[in-house]
Image (cartoon, rainbow, N blue to C red; front, top):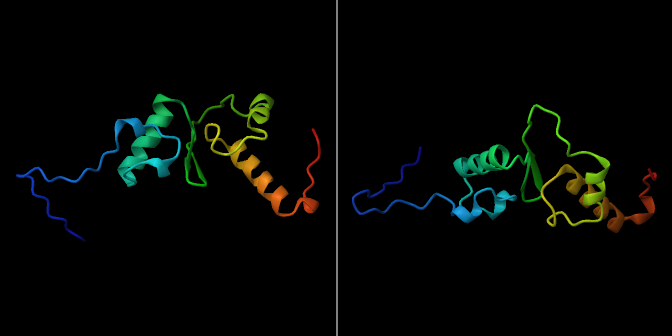
Length: 117
C-alpha cells in the first residue's frame, strides 16, 4: 500500500474532481482525472440523468444494461449512424459497427460483402 502524505493544514489537497464542463462527457478519455470514482460518476450522470446507456472510453464502447427495452435500435437509428464518423454522433453500438465496416472496406474492399436489405 502506498501512502501519499497530504498537508491538510495548508490546503494542499490534490485536485481529483473533474471540472463541471466535463461532467457527462461522452468519452471518458476526455476527463481531466481518469480514476475509478470519476469514471463511475460520469457513467452515473450519463445513465441516470441523460438516459445514455453508451459511453466511449477511447475506441472501447462501455454499455450499461438498462434492464428494459429502449427504442434505440430501429431502422431510423441505423440510417442515422450510416456513413457517419464514430465521434460525430452520440456513442452507440451502430457507430462502432459503422467504424468497423469502414475499416474493413478501406483495408481490403475486395473481400467485403454485405447483402443489401
